[in-house]
Length: 153
Image: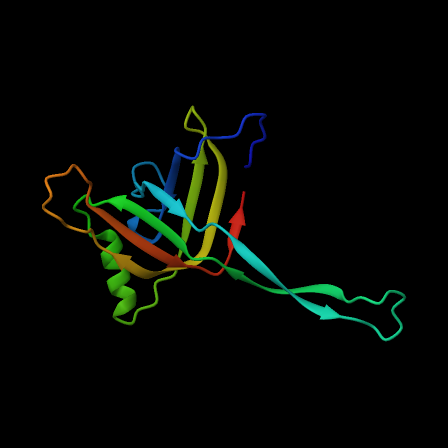
């Protein structure tokens, strides 16, 4: 579904869908009001290989496995326990892998790029830093996800 255009899209207009009982992205079930999404990436490992009769004195690079980066999601604390409940379920020994979807939207809120994280699971949750300084900071929570691959549409 990637859409080409001359001007780049803004990085501020997106939707995160966590799958599972938290919602599948259907109208009215999207719950991912995140202020930051980071870590979309992966790295391919290569093996060096050289035949004994190669014409050039160098090795070939043969792709093999790849490693996916952890995804970090941040949002203001809104009184919902959905992220912590998911982490608690995994912490208590129940595997709960989900398809997490991140959609970049254009100015008209149409999806222009979609990243799907295969078999995503929570790795770490951090609660807000609380300080009585009288400032206007927002209480933030952070969730780190591991996954088994990124698909791009």
